[in-house]
Amino acid sequence: MNKVETAMIRLRMSSHDAHYGGDLVDGARMLGLFGDVATELLIRLDGDEGLFVAYDKVEFKAPVYAGDYIEAHGTVTQIGNTSRKMEFHAYKVIRANIDPSNPSAAELLQEPILVTYASGTCVTPKDKQRFKRED
Image 1: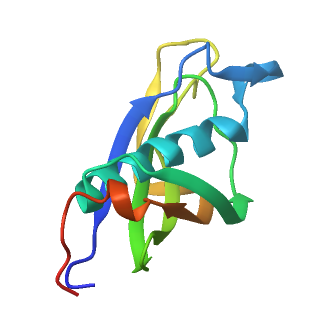
Image 2: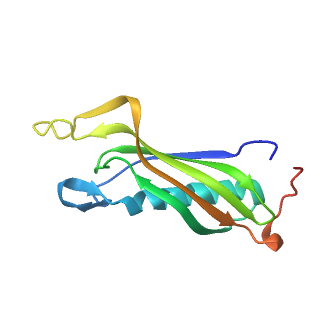
């Protein structure tokens, strides 16, 4: 692989993302973000959305709440004939609801908090790969 491919998206978790009491967002939401990042990476690599085949590892490291801003990062770690191995990290970069008496209060975190880590494999079938690679 000549160049490391990376992608990132940032968005705010809404009250619609909250699944549990206390406005806690479920971990599946982070996996959905990783799927979006993987799709972008496959489009950059192959010109096609490809398919997410499997996660090898998923670790939920810290809670996410409605109002938090999350950055989801993805990196292609290995390119095979049709497979693309990737690693993902989701970070909380803004923490919301830090003061119950002031519900609009938020804090820009000096150090982002790792909330989820995952690794997995995507596949772009050979007949869908639109870009030639010089590896």
